Length: 256
Ligand SMILES: Nc1ncnc2c1ncn2[C@@H]1O[C@H](COP(=O)(O)OP(=O)(O)O)[C@@H](O)[C@H]1O
Ligand SMILES: [Mg+2]
Image 1: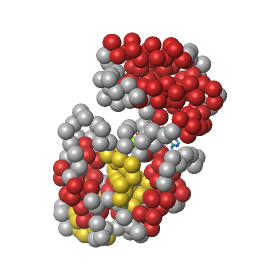
Image 2: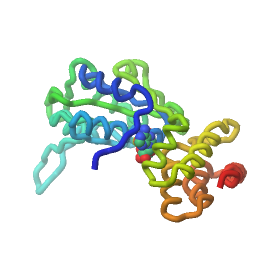
Image 3: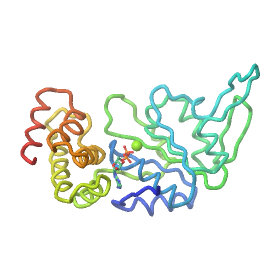
Image 4: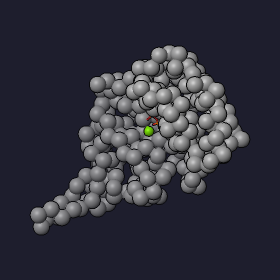
């Protein structure tokens, strides 16, 4: 199935231009704002295979590049996802790269600049990226649970595309298309989403993202009562604080 993506700004032409010039891209923006879907869409549009890696605080350079493993009594080298993408000329998407261990960015440096070369110290190999290779990373600047920022020297190697939640009309289109709910329900959900995003006085780490609105719409489409759908996909997901739950439920009940 072809990935469906609704452009919200100039992201498609910026990415296509960066690809043409073999420049790596950094997608910055909140979780659930369409970054992964966008990369899947661009890979499909530009007819490249896509290798995706979700990074976390345990992700090390070896996880990405590869390691020696013992197989049937013999030691064999096994490529990691970055090495596979470099050899095959694939699109590579490193999700939440700031979460990964520090050695990760170091090994990606020579790959993200004009050299487009991956040095594998364990095998002594030096690999030039095959034509079509494109490195894209994502980064969520608002994510406060870890005090990790990307270094300016790293940031400057990338073309940056900023993602945010779309305007109401576009988000209604996305929510209805992704879930199959009527426009009237999608409109109510997206208006609720906009309202929650404006509640800066509540202690919310993450807000009602497009993804969560799509989830609520899918539950409604499955026959769940809209209040219960919003409660389990939005309210309980973005807060664990009892008072905030009550405040958000009030907003839901005003609309549904
Ligand atoms: N512009 C968009 N076009 C199509 N679907 C979108 C768009 N933005 C968000 N979505 C929907 O929101 C969901 C979450 O988006 P995703 O790309 O996973 O977010 P992120 O990678 O930024 O966390 C997608 O699965 C899709 O249903
Ligand atoms: Mg994602």
